[in-house]
Image (cartoon, rainbow, N blue to C red; front, side, top):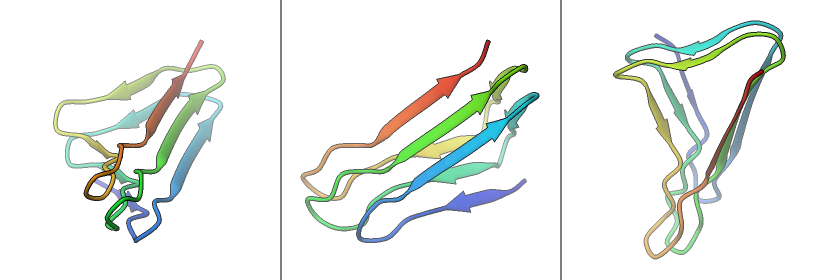
Amino acid sequence: PGRTASKCAAAGRIEIHADGDVTLVAGGALKAASSAAGADGGDVELDSRNGQLALTAGAAVDLAGGVNARGGRLSLRAP
């Protein structure tokens, strides 16, 4: 399984756009978290124009903020 990470003091943004299905399988991870105190978590956007989105058991999306901060935002779009 693949892993995509964007974890640093300032949280990142991960965007995956597809024409067909998007599946995050067990062991797969998307991380857009922040490690800095007071810094909010990042954003993950999964988008399919003509398919389905599937996050299977054991897959992970990490949007955590640093200490005393808010988590990020997960956006899912499919027909």
